[in-house]
Structure formats: structure tokens, C-alpha cells
Length: 173
Image (cartoon, helix red, strand yellow):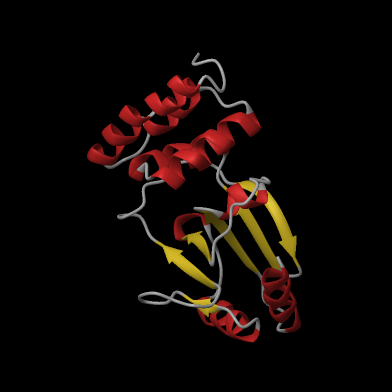
């Protein structure tokens, strides 16, 4: 949050504005998952609006990396394009504002559906936390998963909804 504040203040000093949509770990961390950490902030490009040069400069001023290639050992913003990651169509929800930087997030059901495509252990933990925190039904997540445009990703996410159904976290309806 400190780094996001520095980015927002830098953009504000330049009379620039950025709206980013955070996916990955940030929405889970922001929702209060105990012990969840990450060095990166994944920015979903289809849901974001910003001047790339200005955001890059703001990240550098905040001592953050910007869209690195390969491993990084300092906090960084990672731009995420459709292809490797699959987020179902949605309308972003307001998250928070830091100066001239607004960070939005996908609705919890859409974020969970996107995490069920990869379904690594951390993704399942994140999904179960979000399901419990926001009382999201497995059926709501399945509906979002069914909207993923990539057929293989859609099938994988839909099949992985079983993790939510067997958790007993919320009703499956």
C-alpha cells in the first residue's frame, strides 16, 4: 500500500491518472487473507486505463519494477494480458484510491473462476478464502467459469469448481 501511495502521489504531481484492475494475489491480500503475501501486483490490462510511460515512471519513482521479464527481487507491477491468464468477462468493482491511482478488482466470483483455471495449491487456498469471505456459492463461480472465452480454460475452471463444492464453505446452489 505504501508503494501504491507513492505511485499515486507521483501521478498526481504530473497531473496524470491511472486506473488499474488488480488480479492474482492483491484482491485476496486486500480482502484480509491472513499470511498472504506477494512481491507483485498483477494488472489485468483489459480492465485498466493508464499511460504506460507515466505508470512506468511512477513505479520507478516508488522503487518498484514495471512489467519485468523473468524473476524480480523487488516489488513490481506485472501487466497481464489475456492468453496465459483467463478472467471471465465482468465489470470491475471499486477497490481503493491512492492519490491519482485507482485500483479496482474483479467481482469475487470472477476472480475465483480465473484462479480455478490454473488451480495451483495457492489458487485453491485463495479461492476458498474468497468464497468464505464473500459467501460466494459454487454455482455463482460455475456461472462465471462458463463465461471464460477459451474453451480449454473454461472446461478446466468448470471442472475445478468441485474444490469449492467439497469444501463445505458455502451452499453449492
